[in-house]
Length: 156
Image (cartoon, rainbow, N blue to C red; front, top):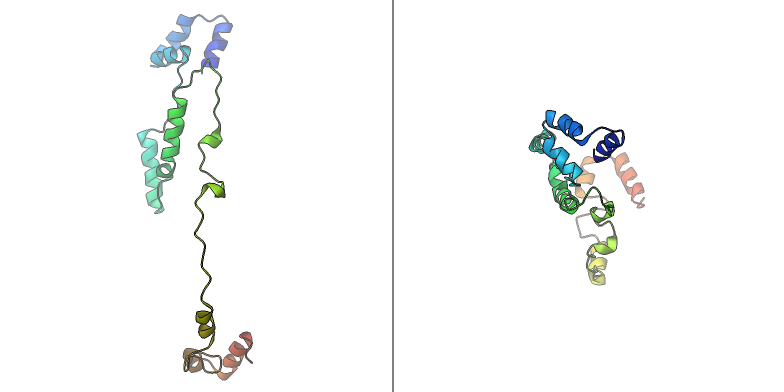
């Protein structure tokens, strides 16, 4: 917007004429802020935030705005101090979540299972498996299906 104002001035349109155009639209204070170099970052209105909430509730998820709000606030706070006449040194990476796995806490080392527990678990308990089939499989499967099941387990 400031660039458009400056372009109008370079074409010979006077400051007061440009201000009148802004003022007619109720933007006189915006004109003054722009020409003084003040930058006001965009922040979603209450209606927009409510719409995010409505859409989220329709599909039973958490609002996307709620998930992004802290990042949006950080961006707004960082940009609020910017001046339109200065060079901007904004890096989007400063606001994105850390995608570096080293930045995340590592899981604790997983201990190896006790060999005695592993060996005894491999031995089927009496009555649980009857020659490779569970009691339920023995009761419900036909003889042909039992053979297929045993073959799939490498026992037939």
